[in-house]
Length: 460
Image (cartoon, rainbow, N blue to C red):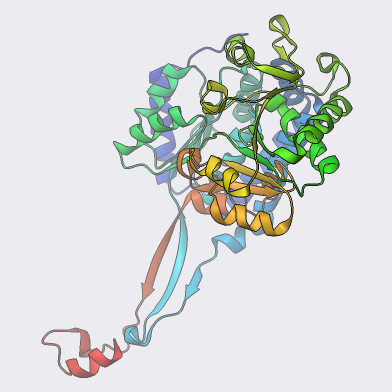
């Protein structure tokens, strides 16, 4: 199944119609936004089976994994916004200093306007529709661009959105990177992009021409640090799950293992058992093990295995785009697998003997989207204090994304700005400071020729 590129002319028409729709004030009413959020929720529930079937077709993603990591997250986000939108959108009153008497101060949240949301292929439902929830909640229009690498999912989403919303409010465009280029030539009030750092730079460069704010949700090599104090039996299962999820094609997947030498052998044995426990002796036959998205990605991943010291797994089948969970020992820190985000089920191991070595290894590299530490709480505090990452888990993986009450986002090379919950509402909004001054009195102190300046100076 191939995706047909949306023409530049249609893109221009949609952008113009959405700008006119927004300027007409159609999205400003809170009741309208709540109605749109409920409509999106109803649409997802109605289209649950087609979406689940599409995820299976494109990625071999099981219904259970698709629901847990895609649909349920979006539905939970919608419910959170429906419950709190009136509170979030209400004016926020702030103290006013005596020097401004008798004025009053408040912050009002206003929608930025027309938004462009570009999503990747690895979580094609969640990473397209979750930002959309924020756009709707804040009162923006939205132009959605799903990934062409998951054509079945992208087509189903387009059909669902077209059935649910008017094009001048929310619309979907399709196509490859040529379409991305055409999209980025248009002017928006905010661009929300999820993808690689290299493409994020292109998005930011294009946005700079119009001084358009951007949200960049990127990635990077998220370290998984296992210290000597770690509970190996428990953490191995959590690490194996985090790496198996979506076959490692997760922006916050544990990318590489940074393991204390004293526990390396025990961890490898435990991980081997846990991979088998989760996926069986032959993961190729496992219902819940996702396939690599396309041949290009498959070939890149298999290239990492050439000449590597494989101590677990290493099986692959290009016809099925299948690669088994694989552990590589003695990974060279300068090799491609330790320089590039892996985005697959391959786990290289690097060892350390002192915690400062692990800190140095992490901080010498770009800031990752996630950091995982397994060990005692005191050492965890030390690691968190001396490193930086978009988010982190102590004695777990992935789960920080599951709490809609916390912001999710990157830092440095792994992204900028954040979303989820109220952060999603805020990121699509402008927080406008408003001072209201009554006219029943007009104190003369601020006017020229600044009489009683000595008194005014004391007040200031």
